[in-house]
Amino acid sequence: MKILIPGLIKKMPKIKLITFDLDDTFWDIKRTIVNAEINSRKWIEDRIERKIEWGTIDDFLKIRNELIKDNPALNYDLGLLRKKIISYHTQKYFRNQKDLDEFIEEAFMFFLEERHKVKFFDDVITVLEKLSSKYKLGVLTNGNADIKKLGIDHMFEFSLSSMDVKSNKPDQGHFVKAKELSQISFQNTLHVGDHPVNDVYGARKLGINVMWFNLNNLVWDIDGNPPIQFKKWSEFINLLEENYGS
Ligand SMILES: [Mg+2]
Image (cartoon, rainbow, N blue to C red; front, side):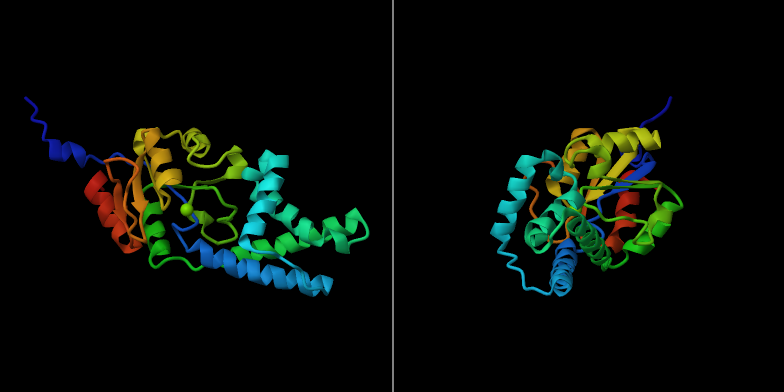
């Protein structure tokens, strides 16, 4: 007769695919974007040789919401949204559409370069290197960071952005596409991210295992069942093995 020990069952290895969020999970996005924004504005002003009234954050959100109202795709197409905003601030300085379009393209490329100047949290790369020899790894991001540009793409089987799936997490688009690409079921998948709703709640709703990167010690208030959480990447592998086996 087989004796089933609950503790052992719980520790059965079952994770085959680990998917990761990027912004605020691998690096601090606010610092990255603020630097990219400051440098991009300077670049634009230098190029058109004028000071621009960029407005406050509230002005920015107002412009953003108006643009999204006109074109709902801007909700997930961050690149196009940024180009529209550059256009909003600079179009009056251009005599024709062609020159404006070229300028916007160049300004956007500059921003993208800056946006990829990220500082990884301690131990992220070491942990990913170890994991990639044992698990399939994937990226599920609502942002527009490109793992190729960051030089970490060799560790991942795939990377899906909101543009790829025409929706934002917590909608199921990213998660469903990951399953389709990897051919690994949700119950054999672990999703790791910082956002309680977009990452943890979104993945959990589908039956995906989750680990919450909770750098700022937020309180879990979504339901009475707090997820496994960690705040240092050096803790990740031990925690993974404790909870899901090795
Ligand atoms: Mg995030």
